[in-house]
Image 1 (cartoon, rainbow, N blue to C red):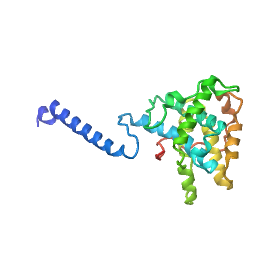
Image 2 (image 1 turned 90 degrees about the horizontal axis):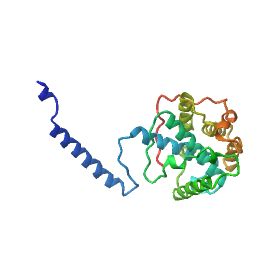
Image 3 (image 1 turned 30 degrees about the vertical axis):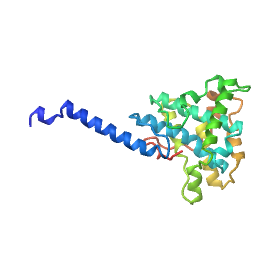
Image 4 (image 1 turned 45 degrees about the horizontal axis):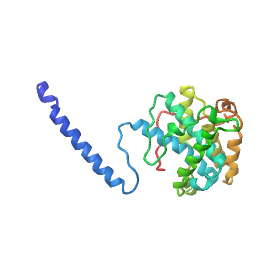
Length: 239
């Protein structure tokens, strides 16, 4: 075959693209009956955004033994969640990943805390506004259970993959992740020691870095449990 026969024509490529787009739109309309849908070719950014949210929802719900909507009204939980999300955003930025806004979720870039919003107390009004914003969103998803919690109830192995992945990539790109590491270590401790879940476990994690700027908390992060390798992104769960 000559080059003309081997290569698809511009018209043929356009027809294929149009057909694919039509199929995507048709599928999206069907899925929108269940949940908000976004079409994107930034799959890495979307996956990282999912991991960022999982690194908050999964361990907080698991440690508290409750749905995220039940615990999100507590200011310290909101602050812990925001600091954890901020670490994921900073790691993604350092890894040159463009985060994709997930359907029905706030913009992670807008939620990420600035240096002034990370403490020490008193926090600026902008930090309080972000807490309230996050609390309102979490309230809408009040029935969401941690996949870790459901896994534990089935008697299967519990691994904080999202937190450990963010921590491992953070180490590679030179970004500290004390909140991510602290939550991962707390999850593993609860499993190994058979600790009873409750808000007290989240309070212990939060107390490790309270009244310190986020940059200064790396020294307080537990180091006895190294993060998992980061060659592959952890499996997804639906928020």
